[in-house]
Structures are given as structure tokens and as C-alpha cells.
Picture 1 (tube, rainbow, N blue to C red):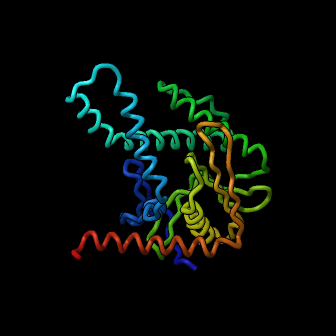
Picture 2: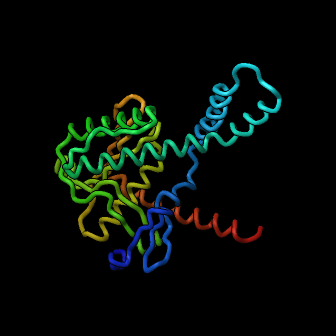
Picture 3: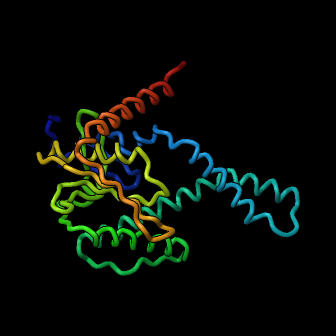
Amino acid sequence: MEPKFDRSLLTFNPKNHGHYYEGKRLLGVTTALGIISKGDALVQWSANQAIEYCRSKLVGEITQEYLDQVFQEAKKHWRTVKQEAADIGTYAHNWIEQFLKGFNPSEFEHEDTEIQRKVRNSCGAAVKWIETHHWKTISIERQIFIPKLGVGGICDWHAYIDGVPAVPDWKTSKSIYSSYRYQTAAYAHGIEEEVGEKVRERWVLRIDKETGEFEDLRLPRAEFAADYKAFKNAVQLYRREQELRKGSW
């Protein structure tokens, strides 16, 4: 069992997305899992963003000076696209949270029609999934803490799904990655140790911002131990990498 902790001493700073216990910064669940490579797909995605940016800018008469400027901007364009994707995910999560709380939120509005379209698609996909299951919320946006690892995070949803205690997690990514297994395992572990009830299932719920459809992955209890072990290994590897960067070779 994890050592007991005082929840009143567990805090979250939304400005830096930082988790703290007794004022000490914790390692974030998703930060630790950032050590896991998504393979060549991410590299290819970054290259594609640069190409698309150049295509949109290289029209009409082009000077060498303008060409150099476009190339410089294209190198960093992936960061803009990545931030936009993160914003879409945040908007969608907030809307879904209100929906699950029974507030019947109005359709999402945004000055950027493309962002509006993608958020609405994501929310629509979430509602489609929700309507195919019987559910009862236990908690939403629950901050979790794993004392032994010094790790904190926020669990999207802890609920009974079709009568089974579960941790579903919403994703607006283009694919379902293995790290999502380890992320939900960390949330499940944190909840179990605090409330004393086992999380029997985990769900990765990918809500597609382009099509408005969902892709779900149900993770049974039999896979929990291996996934949580992988999470602990990721934490260890992340911290060792940080030590090496601060030190000398």
C-alpha cells in the first residue's frame, strides 16, 4: 500500500500545470511519459507541417529574402500546430466535463472556424460513445498523487461504466499510443490506493476531431500490472535522463 497522504496538502497550479505536495513540485504523469518515443510518425508529422506551411506561403512572385523568411518560419511551424492541437483538446475536455456533470453545455463557439469545427467534432464523438454505455460518475478531473513515486496527475473521469469501476481517458490525438496504457494505469493506481476500491477497467477514448467518430480501447484488469510496471520504469528513466542532463558525461 502507498503511504497515506493529506489531500489538503495536494495542490495544482493551472498556470504551469504543476502538481505540488506540501509545496514541493511533483513529477507529472504525462511529463514522465514524454520519455517514450512515438517513433518516426512524430518526425514525419513535423516535416509535413513545414511542407504545408511552405506551400501556403510560396505563391506569386518570390524574392530570395522572402524565401529565406518562409523557410525560417517553417522550421518552427510545428510548434504552432502542436499548441493549436493542445488547445482543441483542452476545449473539448472542458465541454465534455460540463456534459458529464449534467449542465447541458451549448455548442462550442470560437472565432477560428476551423478550431470550432474540430472541437465540435471531438465533443460529438464523445457524446456518441457516452450514449452507447450505461455510466455513473464517481469523480471528474480528479487530481491523483502517488507518494512512492512523487508523481501527480489529473484523471479525466472515474466512473462505473456498464456497472464496472473504470478510468476512461479522452484523447483528441490522431492515434492511440502505448503510453496511454501507462497513463491510465498511473491514474488507476493513484485512485485505488486512496479510495480502497479497485479500478477494474481502463478505457482509452480517442475522439476524432476530423471525422467526429470515436475509437475506443478497453483495457481489462489482467493488463494493469504490466502497464503500471511500465509506468514506473518510465518515471525511473525520465529522472535518470534529467540527472544526466544536469551533470556531466
